[in-house]
Length: 118
Image 1 (tube, helix red, strand yellow):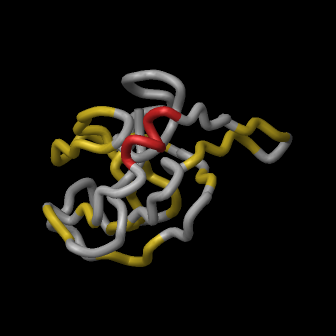
Image 2 (tube, one colour):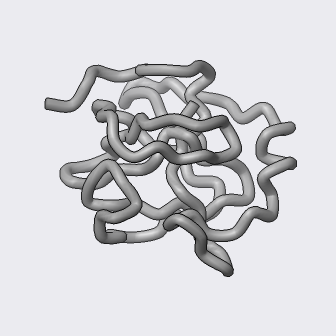
C-alpha cells in the first residue's frame, strides 16, 4: 500500500483528480533498493501532496512531481485515505515533518514496511 494524495483539478478530500487511477492500479511499479536505502514509487500519473502530519487537514508542504520515488523512514496511523493502492490509515514519513498517504505509494504489500513513528 501506500502513497499520498494526488494533485490535479478538482480537489476532493485533499486528494486531487482521479485520472490515471485505473492505469496506476494496473501498472506494476518497482520498489528500488540501493546502498542508500529503499525507495518506493508514487502511483503513476499522480502528483502527491506532502503534508506536515498524517491527514488531509494538515498543511501541504509541497507536491511531488510525477514519477517520484520516495524513502519511507517510519509510518504513522492517521486519517483514512483511499488511493490507487487501496484504503489505508497509514501515512509515510518521507522527511522531517513530511508525510504522504500510504494509499498512494507502492510498497508491495499492505501494512507497515517501516518502523512505527514515535
